[in-house]
Length: 241
Image (cartoon, rainbow, N blue to C red; front, side, top):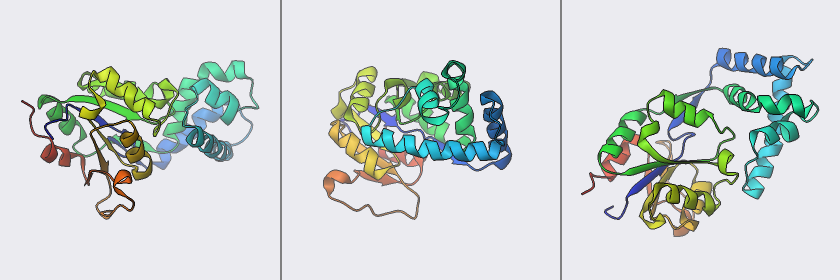
């Protein structure tokens, strides 16, 4: 582990966990319906948005790109509404759309792990596929975490998605660390391992449920390590000299 200088982490299912919360989700659905001005009920309109979002995600996955929020809503999610009305509300609509999926909370021991790794001398960063450009920076600021991350590479800001190696290269460049001296911690074996390998990162770690202990595939498609909780990182990365 001596060669590792920077630790990059995913957000969804790694640093933050999505929990079902029907009251929270219903409030977001109502907010979206009010903002857009649909005549459909919030529930019916939400179901239509979910269908359209699946079409968008398929397109984004195939092309390894992320649309800006204004384009996401005017082209993909609400094309029947006037774009001049929808585009200015795109940031808030995206935020509410994500809230309609559930309530996001910090992973167990997440903040403590971040603080400790920072104290141990590691450069920290985030690489995440996400449709929102503002929610992650706002969350980091609100939780007092922004100062611990030298690099925050979001697909919604850069327009490229994992596993495109370009997003990893951008993150490493922002952090000022050679890719070979970086490690990525994610939760998706197919996407995160392939992207990290192609980018030339020195190591890839996958966070899986405790019941998932075996990963199929050849050495190139397998992670270097599998962990089951973020605090396992403290056993892997000792203080740097």
